Each structure stands twice: as structure tokens, then as C-alpha cells.
Amino acid sequence: MSRAVRPRRTPLVGVLLALALVPALLVLPGVSSLAATDRPAVIGKLVIGHSVKGRAITAYHLGQRGRKKVVLIAVMHGNEADPRRVMMDLVDGAPVHDVNLWVVPVYNPDGLARHTRKNAHGVDLNRNYPFKWIRLSGNYDSGPKPRSEPETRAMMKFLSTVRPAYVLSFHQPLHAVDITERPKFSKKVAHALDLPMSRLDCGSSCHGTMTMWFNHRFRGFALTVEYGGSPSKAKLRAAPDKILGIFGASRGA
Image 1 (spheres, one colour):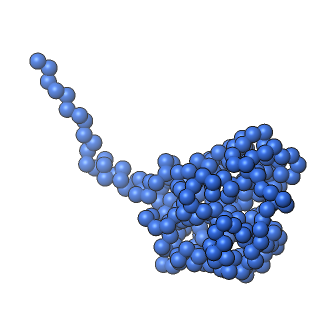
Image 2 (cartoon, helix red, strand yellow):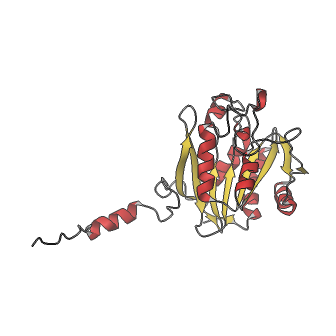
Image 3 (tube, one colour):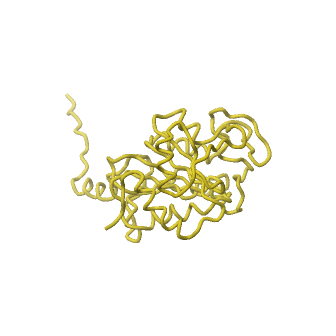
């Protein structure tokens, strides 16, 4: 009669070491180790994907797990770089409290490197999403088909996994907060950031945008925020705390 084979057990020391190396925040596959000492606000980070040219698209995790989930996105268009400073102020600042926050400072790294609106394929990422997509060319080239771009697919997967209650997508240069089907929240954002409200209809009607896709697909709410072409340094410095205040959050030691 053969003897039963006992399953191998990981030594206790090994288990403890593994727990020490893997953060408790693992809400997403691929989340990195805990914050580096020079970034006390960061509790983790995730490379959500790569651009056409292979540049990493990084999301930083701030705040507290178990709180309201919020995602902030900047530089969807590479020539709209000022909101990145707001995002990096949060990433490099003091710890964030009372919100579960993800920050994507640069969504279109190839466009940023070339200072162009579109990605390295010449596609406007904010026309490439699979909701009311139509084939567009020129400055708003929508790509050969919906979600054709690696940046689009990376963001779709990221948002589908996180499922935030709110997404703020920061752009330039229209100097307005979009009037949407949730006007009370839009008004709250506009008031906090000292921006007017306007219907951002892409000139006539929008097609294949990230916010339209998200609002159609999920229970959360995505909103477009447009700074002006040259926002003042004072406005950008004040923005991080004002954004946190929208969600009842703050930062400090």
C-alpha cells in the first residue's frame, strides 16, 4: 500500500518574507511594491500598458483603500501638458487621506515626447473608444477601428478593473468644465477649480471619447475638465488640494 504524499508546506519564514515584499493593496495585477521613501504619498504604482513606441503608461496609487475610488488622467493629448504638473504635485506631495485615488499623469507619452496631440500612429486617443465611434481623419483621426491603439486598450483594461466612482480627465485649452447629465457634480468641480461650465460637444457632436465610453459602460461617472492654454502657476499649484476637496479628501502628514 502506497503512502499518502503530504503537500509541501512553505516555511513560516518564507511566508513572512513574501508578505513583507507584497503590498496589501494588491487590487490589480502588477501593482508594484510600496512607496519609495521620497514619495510618501504613493502607496503603490502600476504600469497599465505601453505606448506605440514602448513607453510605459504609469498609474500611481494614493490615499486609502476602502474609500471612494477616483481616477485622475492627464496628457491624453501630448500637446496639453500643463495638467501633468497638477498630477505630479499629488504624486510627489504629502500622503492623501479619505479617498482611494489613482493618478495617471501621462496617458500619451509618445505624444508628449513629440508635443503632438496624437499618438505615434497619428491617432487621437480621445476618438478611439468603442462607443459611438466613427471613422474620422485629420486632427481628430479616430484610428482604423475602435480601440485600435495600445494606449486605448491599456486605459480600458485599467478602468474596467478599478471601476472608479469618478474619473476626471484633464485637457486644454478650452477653459471649461463640461456640462453633462450630472450638472450638480459638474458645477461642484467647476466651482472648486474656478472654471466656467460649457457644453464641450467637440464642435458638433462627440464620437469615441473616453468619457462617453466610460459613462455608457459603468455606473461611475467620467467628466472632462479643460484648463486654458496657459494656466497660471498659481492656479496649477492650488489645484491638487482643490481636487481632493471635491471628494472630501485632503493631504498631510
